Image (cartoon, rainbow, N blue to C red; front, side, top):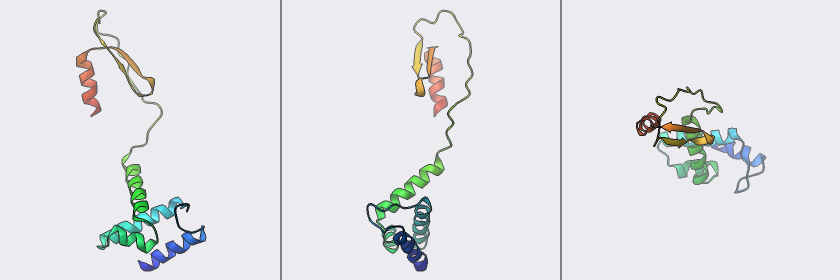
Length: 122
C-alpha cells in the first residue's frame, strides 16, 4: 500500500504538484478514493490514508461523497413518457392546478388525484 501511495504522489508531482490549485484527473480522484477505502478496510483512519497520499482528508472525503452520489443517482433522461387522460367530468369547479418541474402544468386535478400523485412520487 505504501508503494501505491508513493506512485500516486509521484504522478501528482509530475502534473504540477499538490496544493489548493492542483488539478487532479478523474482517474487520480478515483484512485485516491479507492486507496482511502482500502486503507479503512485495513483499519486505518481517513486521516492516515490522506496523509499517505499527501492530500487533505477533506478533499478525499468530498471526492468519495461525489462518487457515491454518482452511483446512487439514476441516469436522467430529458423526456419522460406520460399518459394524457380526458377529464372525468365537465364540471371541475374547485379543481387544482399543479405545476411541476420544467414547466409541466396539470389543470383540473381533484384533491384525491393530487394525493395519489404525491403518494406515487414517494
